[in-house]
Length: 283
Image (cartoon, rainbow, N blue to C red; front, side):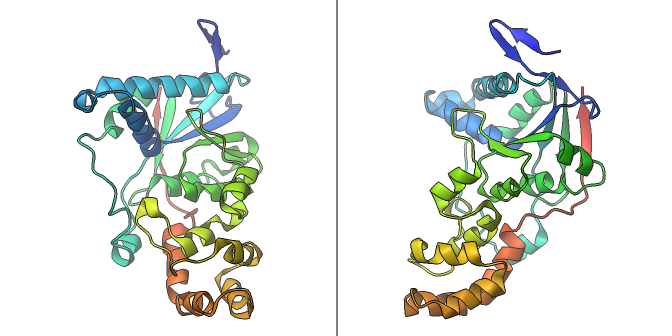
């Protein structure tokens, strides 16, 4: 049964897969840092060493999620955890996430403790980040049928997860007032289809992860149509080679960067979907 908190009706939570009408998958790291930065927007910096401030923000964000999903009687919450980083990323891309500002405190443990006070299931893949664990839920023997049969709401602003929007039952949502990330939103903001997000990030890089473009000053209005048309990296390079709209610098730069493009695509940006997952139930 749905629960009423004051005048608001919230979805009830369950860890029973057979009862779940919808699934919410929370990228815990993304969720915790957003709670921290929202709080930092109004709290004085010295006060940010107080866990309770940003945990309270996380609590309000989580309540907002439950209010949004109040059309469901029972919702299964899955907490996707970072559990290290793949060796091939460490070896091939040491710059990955190297430019991120280090905070005085790590908000993840306290926010995770709060989330685990609710009925939920933690999920992780050893030596992998949360986005790969989330993607693997759709292929894992224990969860694939469930993920295909329910509405799935992924709570994250991680651009890599846009690739999941090729599944019609998946929505990328925010725990705040940010717009949902839909295929239309993706096309308006990036000029590409969700299925091409890995290739887009491969070519242009991702400043939030300290990954630079493979070629500087690429004109997206000319390169994006090639990304949308390409079915794979070799096809993309072939389209680049044949393009008479790209400048010689752009065309030759992309062709010369083919090996890097392939490695980036395979190692950094294409979601890993066949990982061994671990689960822990919190009741």
